[in-house]
Amino acid sequence: DNDTIRGDDNDDEHKHNDNNPLHHPPSFQLKALFALLFGTVATCRASLNIASTYFTLSYNIATINSLTPIFVSMADSILFQTKLPPALWPCIILSCVGCIIIAFSQSP
Image (cartoon, rainbow, N blue to C red; front, side, top):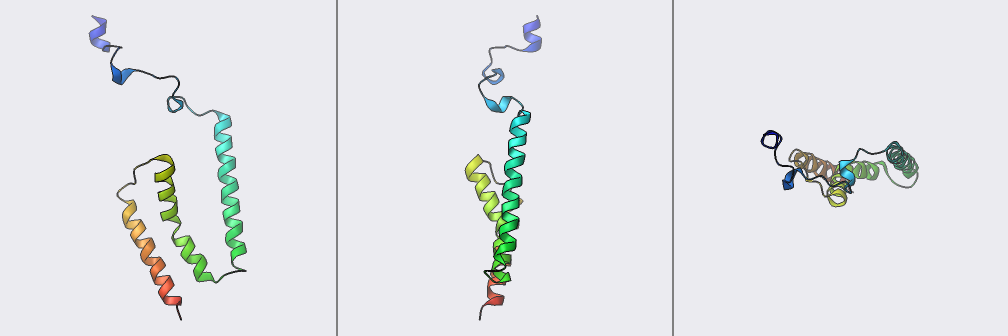
């Protein structure tokens, strides 16, 4: 019997919802929009990093850049409800330790 080979099409785990956008590959326009958005954000961030050297000390910039992995991982976790990988925690701890070292080494 073909139904026993292929399985039952009425199983809940095999149901396909065509309204779910995750089941369809992203279109070229969506990919281009994300690329444009990423390029804009990266350009603004780089420009602001360069401009910030005129308004603050270099160790403040280094501290902010050292905290970037924390901000990115937390934003990813909050905005996209992703689970943080276990390997990220040592990176976050090292980033925080680096920030503490920078802060204490530059204090008067």
